Length: 393
Image: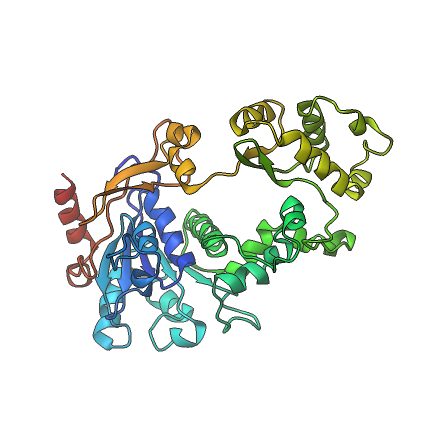
């Protein structure tokens, strides 16, 4: 790990079986923390989670991404010897990430009181679907549950997407959006607690993290309105087909609407009575969508997006995966690094979704094999860190 990274010297123990907890560890690792995965004897379930790295590969692409730069120990927490090794590891750690279900924590020695008693210095981050307290603390939740429990699924698809596919059922966002939002909230919460200088238990709910992202879900507690994907008040925008692809458009603010009008060449209908009022515009959403469609149909995507961004209109290409990897913006920021995949050539993998200077964060290295750093459980963190530094040198 680079000594100049923001979290250099911070030690993290990660006991995770969910994407949310593993992603929190991934973000901390990307910032320079030394993250050790504590895996059960049967290994992390994420190691077998599809998609895989190749047609003949049994290695999870999801796990490879989440575990970049991390170390691994095998530890049976249901046995006394395993718990002793775990607590030896935690004694020198700054942060513990754990997503063990509440009802199993005491048996594994991971309940907050036990951790606080043994390691009063540590920030104990709990990352569960519905938090570690309250009436839903014992509930399980996978990605599709969480995206809908947070209200986001209630709004999808919307805009032109709902207009084009009116019979499509509620959707979840592709991938692991909800759980990764939980991981972001978990990483930030753990760092906030760490910077107070005292150990504490930090309870993060993945559902809460996603409710905070989807502001439309909670606005009814303010003005009484309840948005829905087919009847929401904001009725224009979304996915728009162009000459050589599609763009995504969203204009929530007045200045963005004015930019869109200018982008479209100040059409006469935009100056009609009522069009200067956001509520009345939304009521005419179907009409506006039709005008947007007709106007955009013969426009090249790149030219349209460039002009829109000059005018402050929130518009971007609706990218394919390849376009994301090869995009000029992504290339300029160095978002993806070319890495050697063991036994399967090279692949481009995101290093981190952020950076702290002109250069992107360094690639953390391919994930360790299960139990590759087992000596941490017996020799302590210091000797293993010295061995890793010799290997890196």
